[in-house]
Length: 317
Image (cartoon, rainbow, N blue to C red; front, side, top):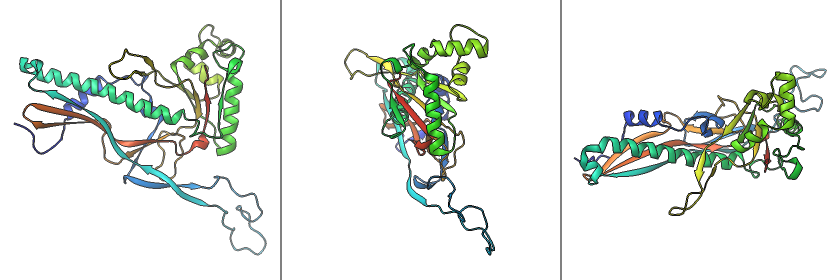
């Protein structure tokens, strides 16, 4: 009998899809965009102008003669940016009149469709995340394009000096230092065999050959390096597959905070998630006795609320 009351959340199918979900090592969107729950679909956050105390006498915490208490710090509060959480996802259909379903494979067919749906949705979310994190527009004024001998795939380049340039820029603009480097697999492969990093590893880590994640992070003065290795098909439907790494040939130095506050963002990248919602919720619906529809949904938004905490290099390799 058809379910005429609409979608019903399928917890068991949801758990099954998570067992088959792409590995975190490949798909990094939810990792590099730390989630914070917000109570409303839309909202604003506060940005204290500059985030630095005034240098003028009397406007810090210093008391002048005759004052009963210190003067207030001169600041401006901007409330012009915020979040707009939307319901995002994909759906697929199962025909109950198909030969597979008629042969008694309905349950397996449902699992197979849900598993494919989970991967398709992960690819779309990864593309959305990469478009923000590697956008020169988002990081306008804090981005540089590498070319020729400056590219990290060239032995004459100096990624260690580039990392310090990024760190200095972030510290000057925000008062904070970067904690994370986000790159794709090709950039990671170039860094692993870069002569300067190999030398650093041999002298500091007392190892030789290809350098490790920790070696790269230490050499480039960050706590961790996160590598996006997810691959997607860039060809239009019906054409031969053209697989490519979703994360472009960029490198984002940034400060991430894993538990950012909703009203006062302190992370370069952030994911606004509607309070009480479930990531990757699976819902099923039977609009007719012959069709079943499965949806996988997220109730969130990727954002770069604090671009001052990031510095982007493009065309790194």
